[in-house]
Image 1 (tube, rainbow, N blue to C red):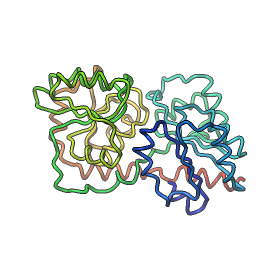
Image 2 (image 1 turned 90 degrees about the vertical axis):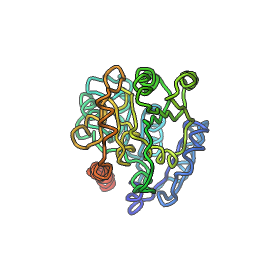
Image 3 (image 1 turned 120 degrees about the vertical axis):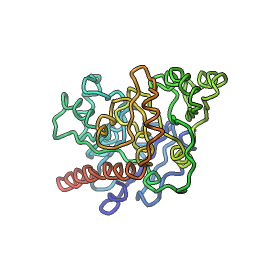
Image 4 (image 1 turned 135 degrees about the vertical axis):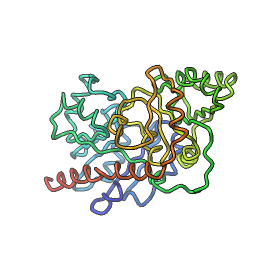
Length: 329
């Protein structure tokens, strides 16, 4: 998307990080061909300093694109109003997993101040249509970094008898319940569960792994190493019930690797459209029948191709909105 924007506009990329660990693992992903000006924002930077830095790069016509409101809308809205520009918001709050979700009134009021809201799933669009006009909400699927689109680096890669979880160790992610509730199945099938990430449940997971031979726990890795882990696994497991657009689901399917998750969020849109998508029981268990289907899955090439097509189907949604906004100003 940034490459397309660079053809017609100047782009100031403001890259913000949640933590020092996030900065170490992801700072290397910034490609100089994606922007005209770049601001690398330290986690502790004051919002007013950020606004001053952006103002120094202000041009005649401005548009702010935020990638999320999971940290709150306050700073993004303030920056757009200070700059006197339009504000397009990429919204992917995890709680929008079904149309019945009721957001806080304060969030809806802030969303009304945004010119356009771009969401990554139809479920989120339907949920927000209760509060915002349809002409203001658009679906545009979030795309992983370009590395995920590349073919397998090693066509002879060894696929291990392993399921992979990569993400935060939080209760809302469901990984602890998944590990506990499937322990017997994993032990009986000599199947490894590799858990990669960090979070408040890290200590509990390490304690569980000490007495659970099939469970392996590793710290967070950078995306390039994660791709290798995805490619060499039977499948990726995403046991969360609270994600409207799980990027690891999209990343794994784009690599041609099956995913086992719940019928929630983006999985509802993908269900029936692509192969390699399998579902967990409500109690987080993986049935032996589903496990056998995963182990016998043999069409990674077709899965990769279909996911490429899916992600390309709406790539001009945001660009068309920006062009229209530019012409109006």
